[in-house]
Length: 358
Image (spheres, rainbow, N blue to C red):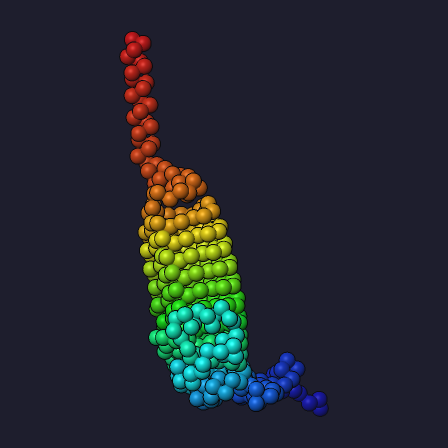
């Protein structure tokens, strides 16, 4: 008699063929690396939230690696605890701690003789940071010698990199920040990427200086966005950005081309006394509330083609394209009154002409 295969047996065969190795268990691994030079932890496999918490990488271990100057490489992990960079030891400002002569001179001119230093690369990708990550500096500076990468990482609390100096590239692309983001008086000497980032309740880049290109393209600012008195020395990209709350670029200086094309400003926006030294692209930008360009300086005629304004901006702006756009928008908004006016004017002219002929 022929043996009959049960449906369960067939199901097992399908699973074995489709997934010969089975589902990889959740585990924390340390990739092969020179442990004297690096601190690497990768979470692999199908992990539940409880497993992620159980396998959390202690913040103390991460901080100790940073303190020792090792490269930090974290992927897919959860960090348990806070990291405060102000706990790093102070070091004298020398060519070793601050390699750039111009930066050393600037620090000394401000009376800063000692700084904190992060020598290794800092990479925390596709991970979760439940607690605060902060410099906690009111004075002084912290120098990041290597690249800093936070791509795809979720920050459930505030992050504060105020007074930080980044000598190499910085990348926060695809990150999610639920609360405050502070980069007050930060300096960026390498390319900066905040592309497709979800910013939380309050974002501040007050008086930050970008020496290389910077992009915030396709990001969303859920709360207040402050870029007051920033200085960009290379191209800046704010295209396709959504600013959901009040937004300020007052006092900013854009040294090279800046793009705000296809961006949406949902609340009050301020460009008071902002200086645009190169091309400013506002094509198809949408301003849903008041926008204030009082005192703004455009060294090159900006492009406001197809931009829309819920309320007219400062009427004294020397922008022909903007004036034309505003004229057509005014005509559209007043179209009913204009139609009535044209009809009445036409009727009046016909009446006068008829009476004169009679």
